[in-house]
Length: 328
Length: 276
Image 1 (tube, chains in turn orange, purple):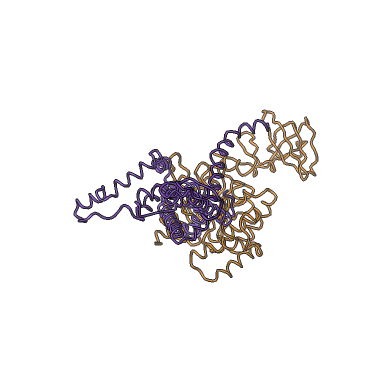
Image 2 (spheres, rainbow over the protein chains, first blue to last red):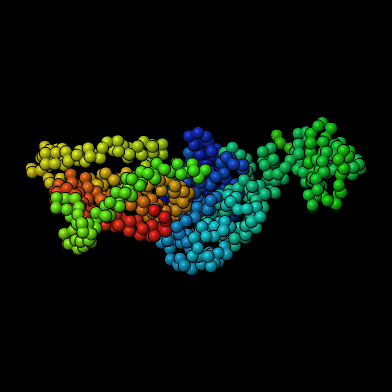
């Protein structure tokens, strides 16, 4: 079934080449190319409807690409059925089999492949995701966080070449989400499996990924390390999607790089006169809103130690030239 | 509010009381009386009618009815499940196919059964065509046997199997089937380990909806089975007409009801659902 189509560079376990998916009404994915390295935690980040989930489904085999090539370990998987591809998906709603117990859910894939040592491998993976002791429960009898870990275990136990995760944290409550984020990253490091992670949460993507790709309207806008993409966004969309941004003239400055001074001596070369319109205390910092002379409002995130600023106070808004974001 | 509710329920209560509970009480009373000299009933009260069930002749008829109903239910399942599966995946043509399934109801049950007689009899369409093409020289005995009864029952009650299974398949979360494929299950394995177990309630509902009317079937065995293929429904009819033994007819009717209730109760207990 598997045939070598083209030589892929060493290191890339998954490669998409000019992949397009045209639905009857719209083009969900438009000529996307990306490479995911072996063992990497790679995120697809973008707003809803940007094509990131469709991209994941193309890799899983639930959708056929209209054109383009998908390579796994250098071999084309484009014509393989989902059950023939050595990738596995953690679904957004987990898609656990409600009529099976936790153990039977995790065993499901091993049994379909006719593998031996089911019991030992299931026990190991349940230990890894800290579900030992809950084997006999059904999905309806465990918590949301536990369900998410069953879905993870069910895929991990198959040791797929790439694990595909479709917003796996979105169904969890916000407090749990941050904790699970760290656990998931920890599990990924310890098993060494390549993760392709789909999310619309930029904080999640920045915190977890080795590299990430930002998608917008079916196109891939930029791929790189979190620092790279955050600090050197190539487009206005990437810059504003990854974090808040002040527009000062044609220049973009992040709130945490926007500084406020009371005198010209404190300020650098790039400074503008402004009036404080609002000061919000957030515990570890202040959010200062100030209006520039041309009427534009900027937000500066200043340290608690820099002290409060009064409303109506006349200040200088300034920034360093290396913190400027410019776009063609 | 309470008054209003009473008035709203009054018509259905009246209907149930007059047309269901009262006749049932009469049947119950009849079953404990004696056979009248010219039909009808007379005193004294006794339980003789119930004792007659021990007769091997009647036990055989009862067993035969259960057997024919079971085979018909199985037939409906084997035809109905694939059909329901096909319709559930037919996309925009779902509604068209569903209306085709229900279409036979537009014609009287009696007329449809007669139509089968015209198809199956010795000079019917099937035998005529087979003879014309030289495949047979003497007509095949298609009518007036158990096969014809099962065929008629399967044909009549197929929609009652298809619709509940279709409803169960519609409720099935598509992502579960994707998950099965994703975990390496080929289509057959996914069907066996995911689709069928999750549609079990629909399959049970269909089986019950088909089995119960098949068990009490009267018209189909009468017309398609001829005099040879007697089911319990025909036996009951006989007691009230030719045999003129109303008490025994009443007793069989109640026994049939009891068997059906017992089966419903057992299957409800089994699936842990409240069907009644």
